[in-house]
Length: 303
Image (cartoon, rainbow, N blue to C red; front, side, top):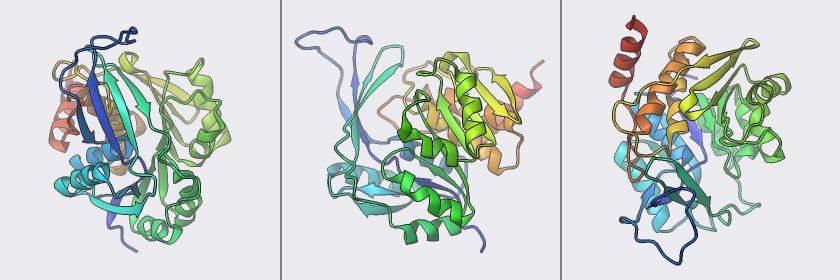
């Protein structure tokens, strides 16, 4: 069967309420005066879907979404961007979070964990049909995506995931870490990033493991060798780090599906992640293919 979808994104649909605060951590006070508080669609799965779509990849997103105002925002985001969306009813309501964003662009996310009833699932026949039409599946770690992993594996589609700030210990993340062919994660909570990266590769299926390290760049593990990936200077002032990791994954997957070697994929990821840091938290914008390729060419040809 010919592929109709380049990247199938599972999970991670939701809304964030953005609150700009004077500093992080935020000292206790009875109240703060802050700029306008805004709620917009865009959590990790949404950002990856927007990112790969902006790079010209045929994209489809499936997740559980509530029949509520927040769900309407998610539906509108996909409709306005022309991204296919398969929505499964979520009785508890659309996933949501509050993001506190400091002046330097750092953010603190507060996730509402009441939006994931244990008994609700993505229908396996629906997942199987979408996977059969896809070249690649990117799986968010939101519930209930772990249950979809066997269906994806049976369909023979390649899989990636982002473990975000996994500490290398919490059991919940292991199903994702050990079933994916490409694993992204942050070094934020890791005492020994290289040890964790090697553990993922040794215990699971991953052929490529990428650990992003903010201003320190990223680390790429391929064929048993860890390589440092330098940072890329953002094209404008940094205003928000929200979505930078999702942008990195989008750029990396764009390169991988184009047949580029892992280090080139990581360069694409770094460029996309740097661009994302220049986008205000209230928007869900991503770098386009032309700008990404032009920046990569410039960096590659620089003496």
